[in-house]
Amino acid sequence: MNKKIYKIYLAGPDVFRPDAVEYGKSLSDMVRAAGHVPLFPSDNKFPENAPDLSKQIFDANVAMIKECDVVLANLDDFRGHEPDSGTAWEVGFAHALGKRIIGYRNDGKSMLEKIADGKNIDRDENGMIIEDFGHSLNLMLIHSMDYLIIGDFKAALEQVDKQ
Image (cartoon, rainbow, N blue to C red; front, side, top):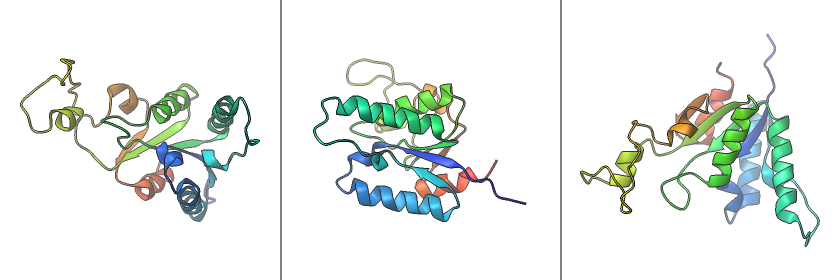
């Protein structure tokens, strides 16, 4: 039986790390070692000082998502209690395209547990209701994915070959 080879888009705020190029290479190497083709946003190259650089990055990432078979999305909290907004958008876009989506995060605490932080409250410091469905992410993200792995990238990558 031949193993299916997937093109895997690596979504997440990892492109903002100080070591983004090296880290992206390590993730891509793991994808290749698993027998698949990585699509990492930082692999795209753009002209220096392009006046429309942000649009070029957007278009290139959209093209990668359209080309991929699977999205592996790093949904760890980023700059607060929620995942990176760009990654959340990519997950929604991939869902709309019918792509297979595997999210991963290291923290499995529910939204209420994270935000209430041990206090007996159901609202945040601004008086807004804290979503309480027992999920570690907003319900729109949870239900747009095929799987959410509580673990690291390697654990999410192992899920790719499981149907």
